[in-house]
Length: 72
Image (cartoon, rainbow, N blue to C red):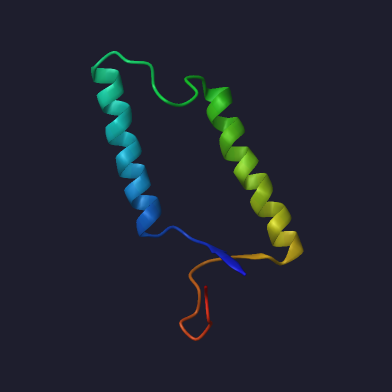
């Protein structure tokens, strides 16, 4: 069972992404990600589609794991 929740790693990734994007823009370099909204949405919705199928299969739960459950 996999769990999906906003935790420390996601917050750190958000901060690193904002800093990286700011530095690349400040140095007038091309960003290391799709520079159009369509490309970014394709990545996001690909992940959302993955989560939907995993949820239907019962292989993923949303929220923080219970302390009593053994999570590998």
